[in-house]
Structures are given as C-alpha cells and as structure tokens.
Length: 373
Ligand SMILES: [Fe+2]
Image 1: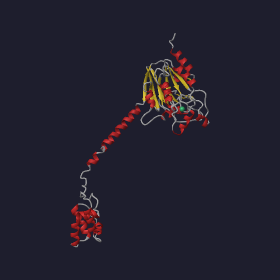
Image 2: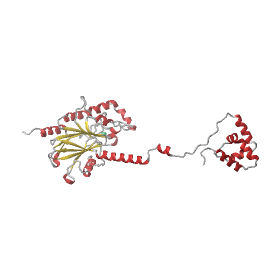
Image 3: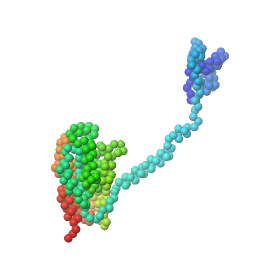
Image 4: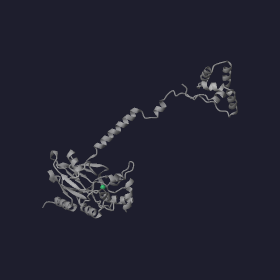
C-alpha cells in the first residue's frame, strides 16, 4: 500500500527519464518497468502511464517540456502513519464520555426529585390568593377587576399565586395581533414587574408561587427565561411549568399545592376537569390550580384516604378576547381569581374555604385571625 498518488506522465518523464530509456532499450516490458519504478521510487507507477510515455515519442517530449518548466521540488512519498493515537487523543475517551453522561443523568434525576418544595408555616389561618391569567399587556385586561383584587390581597396572611400568561408575547403568525394592542413590549415588561415584582412602586403582593403560561414561554430565548429573573427576589417559588409545594405546620397535617398553567384533560361539562382528574390520580395534592382556558370552575370531592382535594381553574382577567370570539367560546363574566382561606388546624373539607369574591375572602381571613375575645 502506498500513501502517495501515482506518478503522472510528466513527473515520471522528468524524474526517471534515463531509467525509463535504459529499460525500454533493454527490451523490458511495460509491466516490469512500472514495477521497477514503483520499487525504486516508493511511489506507485501505473503501467498505463509507462505505455503512454512509450508511444509516439511522448517520453522525449515530456522530458523536454519538463526541462523547460520551472524546477519543481521532487515530491516526497507520504509516510503512512505508524501510530493513530494522536487522532484518538484528540477525542474524549469513550469511558470518560460514558461516565460524564451517567453523571449528568444522576444530577438531572436529583434535580427533578428536588422539585417538590417544602415550606414550614405557622399553624394559623392564612389565605392563598390565586390570580388567573392577567395578560397585562392586552387591551382586554380588566384593570378595574385586577386592581380591586390586588387591593384586597394586600393583607397580612394572604400569599399570592399566579397561574401564568402574564403577557401576550405574541410570536410567529400571532404577531399580527399586535395590530390590535397598544402596549409595547417594554411597557408589557414594566407591567409584569409591577405585578410580580417587589419594588417600592410594585403592586405590593406577597408572592408565594408563580408559574409560566404558554404565552410566557414564547418570551424565552435559548437558555433564558426572563420571568425566572424577574421573579428571583419577589416570588418564593417560581417555575416555568409546575410548582409542587408542601406546606407543613406544627402538630397539623401538611397541605400540598400543585400549581400549573394547565392540566391535561378536557370536559365539555366542567372546566376544572384537568386539575380534578389530577387530584384523583395524585397521591398527595390538596389544592390543584390552573388557568389557561379563560373559564373557571371548582370541584372538591373526597378521594381515597379521606383526602378532599380542591381542584380549581381560574378564568383570568383577559376579556373581549378575540380568540374566544373567533372560536365561539363562551366568554364568562366571573372567576378572574379566587381566595382560598386555609385553617391548617381543621380537618376534612372545611380545611379550605373558597371565595370567588376576594374581598369577602380577605374579610373572612381577618375574622379568623382576629384574637378571640
Ligand atoms: Fe391565557
């Protein structure tokens, strides 16, 4: 095996003119001559090249042309690599690649397991205020209702939960909908910071949980979720998909929250079918909340183990919804948000009291927390 290209006719004539002439004059055959050249040069010499050079004075003509051409350094035959290790060393050894992959999988599984959050709470009545999709930059956002609910929730012992779709974030073919929206992208972010942030001029809510909605996901860029940054210091538990939070109390049963923008499962009969189905299948969730459909419903029923999970879907604050009109969906009037007043010391279905009127829920909590006379 040779690692160099065969001699071309002109190279051969220039480099081995005398040898070719001598062997030809000695009556050697073309095959023998090509073998001899190959042997002495270490470079393959084709019989067809030798034959062509011996035809019609080609050898003499090629030698003449070669002598007139600029001198060219003779080609050194390429050395076959004796050791392939330099190429192999340039790649990560397979054993290290496998170890690295297994390590990453271990860390990923560990991270998933750590998604279940635990928060110790005082064993006293408190409330969770669930805000449905606000779509703050949409012209149909009912600011009158949102401001009313924000005001009602600025009270000691009320912890807020957002189920996502904080802005429209139109992308792709939906970007045409910016034609009907006066809020700019930067104004939308200012409104989101007002709602979820904790600056002096923010809404001033005590955020426990926020999850991202499908609209919010459209704001992500590679490796970056702007809401994770926005919520870092103001929301205790943020996730772009789901928050499972176990609230623990001294001498009381824990209470587990499962918050998502949506749960799989639809029913014509009940907008809370998705979270209600999850409530029956889940082993521990006591309150399951979602938004997304812009319709509201609640279902509480006893499941195995005597648990009485509350499954609710919030309607959200976006009204005059073009999409709902386009698809023929019923646009509901109520259910933008809800307050769930929780008495951790209670047992059974009465442990959670649901108020679709947030002001009424806040008032009930105040009464429950008031010192007994
Ligand atoms: Fe939405």
